[in-house]
Length: 335
Image (cartoon, rainbow, N blue to C red; front, side):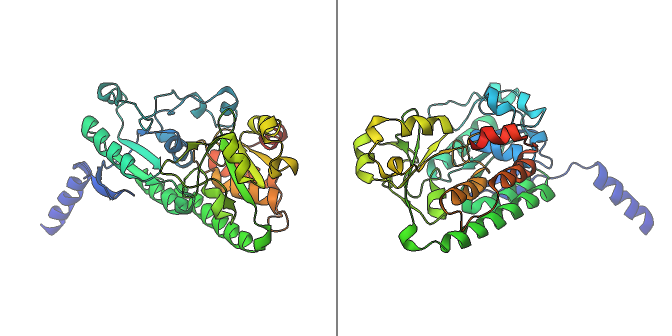
């Protein structure tokens, strides 16, 4: 009789539906996750980048359609996934009916954990009935975020592999940056946009690479993650180094007559951050920021960051994005 009961319990466990699991996201929200998460909708570009790195087979699409050059740095067939829009963009209204047509098991957001994004998660989940998880996208949080995302998506070993790389990179960057004498710590301006005058102050997720490398952000802190500066303000800040999102934008900035007297321009320290398929320092805040620490450290302090940046870039793209970079692709990234 005992054997019959045991067999019955085993059969029941196989046919009974698995229960949902409660998950506490990084905003403190308690979210009931389905037993299996197979179809994930990224809420914005950062979430799409993280989802692609950890479990691209779960992606329903991109928040924004990848550009023509971006597609060459994204593994097939994921470059051809459709653009589905970004829930996180200001002014966007969630179309619950349209979203339901995609049949997502989960909506994922990765980035700034603030009241605004917490309320967006709550309202979207309420309108759609789809579980919505918000994870911390700051650089220092990346090891934990990658591990948690791996667990959510049933890709624990993959999340652990990427998290271990993130931990090593962050530890090395902190130690090496700490070896730079205080008198050699540059004052840095980070800019993006057509004229390079959209910036981010200390504490912003867009410019945290500056602080992590022990550098000084010349832009004042702001309640906004990104804000518009003026040419006059930038002239007064006198940065030693300017980091611009994109090599072409950096070249335009360095040639702008308004900025010719900046120490960074006079001394040839205007650096264009690579941005294919995701911006290395920002645009969007993605796992590529780990590689940006190696790139910028090597550019400014080669004695402390002596590794071959081309080899480091090949390793990162293969590990995170499943792309084997050719010499031509490396030249395009690092020009």
